Image (cartoon, rainbow, N blue to C red; front, side, top):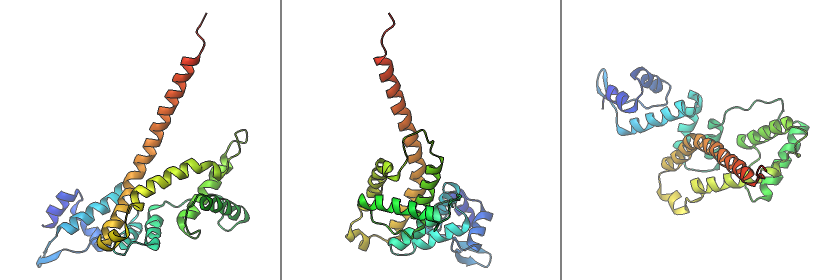
Amino acid sequence: MRISELSRHAGVSVPTIKYYIREGLLPPGAKAAPNQAQYADEHLQRLKLIRVLREVGGLRVDAIKTVLAALEQRPGLEVVGMVHSALSPPWSTRFSAGSEEWNAAADEVYAALTSWGWEMYRETPTFRYVVDAYLAAKSAWPPEWPPFSFTGLRPYAAAAQMIAKSEIGGTSATQLQTVPAADLMRRLVLSTVLIEPILLALRRLAQQDQALKMWRRGEEQRPADP
């Protein structure tokens, strides 16, 4: 297909496509004439992925390059780390990694997760992100409320494990050898970018559901007016 057709099918303007080619996000088309190139279905699929990462994931060009590079490698922990690092927004708090307070929180988080059977590396950006977020939440926790600790987040951790198992845990060793690596990594990338907003929205809907049921029970149990 010509670049105008690629533009129409992908919903991306021609100047943007040319920009992606210059930046190395999209490979150039095959030369059909001095001023004309032909593009294949692979270009269309890659362009759709770039569009998702840009418009839904909000990733910068350099982060998209990192994700696309990961798609070309065999799945592994280091590749998953590359993807998560690119997809995670920078977390900026007043807590400094390596400080006494931060190290104590990291020990608390790591001890809790490992006691629940989790396996992870403390050096990954995602682990540091969790520690930063935990410290930020803990610092803002109202003192009159029950004490806030990471162990109290176990229900959230259990839900996260259940989701991760449905995304990754079902992949067998045979599949790792037979399914193209790019397909497995694309599944991880798309599920992270596309499903996380749905998970957030579902959680809020679940809060509405539980609140309505709680208030309804309260009304049913309220003594009738004499």
